[in-house]
Length: 468
Image 1 (cartoon, one colour):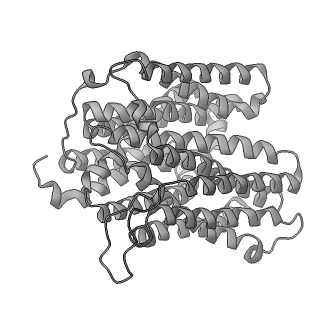
Image 2 (tube, rainbow, N blue to C red; image 1 turned 90 degrees about the vertical axis):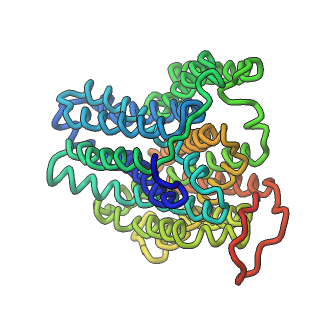
Image 3 (cartoon, one colour; image 1 turned 90 degrees about the horizontal axis):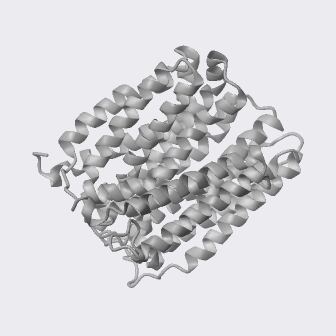
């Protein structure tokens, strides 16, 4: 990179966010096109499910390894390779003429998405050493996530209906090409110490296999049955692989995940809180959509519009308020406020009626309380990356993304299983369970270290971020 990084860090952040947006969009845009894909490729229900699951398994399974590779080989190199792989795989998805080709391309797409996503937060840390600017950058990352979630289903419907399902994948080609060209110019060419500094090949194989098998168990647990022999065997195998990985990390000279990482109280708690929070909120997103359509008979468009205030509230808070709240109150209190709002909002859904719905009274308060996610997610990102050494930033970024994906997959699988076949009472049970998960996250957040100095007064310049 030839330009001064101090002058280009905000454009560089835009490049990182563009890549993240492309990956996030793909997670939601595909679900809208599934019926059209099934009809065109003449695939069965199981094959159609793997159009989604192949991406999730590769993405969730490779995040930790990709983050560590970013630290060792250079985060810029891994990020650009991930964007290139994701873009190329998107073209292959669009060109697929049968379900087998599409599923294989989706797996490659998930691998590329993992490479790009795993090092994103690490690059943000390197770009913004000043804590106040870093908080604003993390807010922009949160805004990107909310924007991707809100745009995905709408854009997927427009493209599928207007041009055909292939274009939900072809649309990634110009975005990916632009991100690659801008990234080569704007992202600093950081050189890692090389694979010898931490290339634990057996450990990498163990953790990747364990995470992939664990994610597979979660996403297939509902259809196969949580107590089925297949679910129990694959779940047990995943636990054995992850236990073997953890044991190896204590004995090898160059561990992939050094034990000191999870020994840090703030890092361990931030990842556990995120897992619980994402489990509750991804389940909430799916369940509320199902309730509105199955119980209240909303159309797909009406459901999207009903849930739009949540995405808008999250986006606005992430971009405009989260960094200010952290600067004034610290990450810990900002996180507690966000979790309190989310817990109250999800708990309100246990009152949803089986009969006619009053949207303004029954649903709107919950969608507005989702603004708490904008506070909580930004604070958690700052906490999860707070102890990042230069040589560990990619690993910590990959770890945060991994707990996010595992939490999301677990929440959708468990909460939808609780709601299935029980009518409105099932939805109440699932929403109550989601509220309980958020309450548990709130209690864990109370155990985070307190600020080591008081917050600045309202009219003071934003101080450095305080850990807690």
